[in-house]
Image 1 (spheres, rainbow, N blue to C red):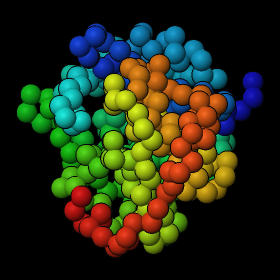
Image 2: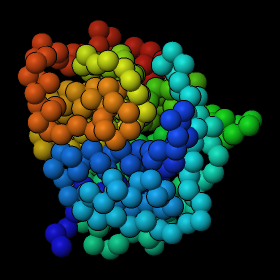
Image 3: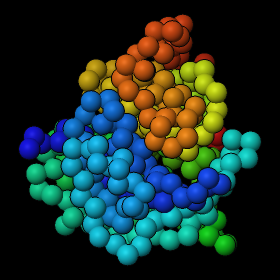
Image 4: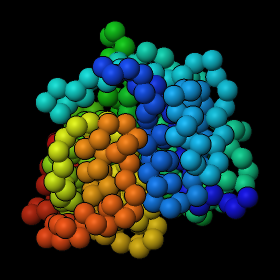
Length: 293
């Protein structure tokens, strides 16, 4: 079997919605996105829910470590703001769970959802384009299980990450730690219907959103992250990758669940329709984005 060329690590979750329980989590949406974009995707997860089996069967390889518990969230949206309640958390994913042959994947994405991952996994991919969605390291459980932000500082993971993608809502005190912003790392803050901000080199850029009729925001940032890594690995151009990822996320917003994960042809067609949209430098690159969002 050919070596996977895109690896995702993280818990596939069960999300409790008004329509019932559905699979979710960054690992779920990002792995499906990379697969729809033509990558041979490997997924390392633990305690994935039965509801995810059909979708995960489309991936090249899946290692699902057995667990009697599935990481389960309840998501509520009001005016575009999500409130989450954590009901249960599956056991951690450890370095020993990683198949040796997967260490050679050219692109890897660490995608924790609730501090379930051994951070030393970052050192397992010295030759890969390493993306990190640190959302799960920026969360803790507050009163009644309500998910709250917390600070995260992991020099090992940060030092190896070439791309960081997260929502501005995940940041404690709405502040980007200055040590995240280095010249050799891309940091992207997704902002829902406002698009995204990207720090590259010593500058901030604005990635515009594509027009979309909002139906379901869940997973849009995860689709963005995977699409960005796919295109960035192909072009080496952070601006091109940003537009591609923004367009990909617009499809997820318009559909519920995994139905919103787009194909490359869909993305290309929509980008052709809105060629006037461009990544632009922020007027003041040293603006308060790294101080107060």
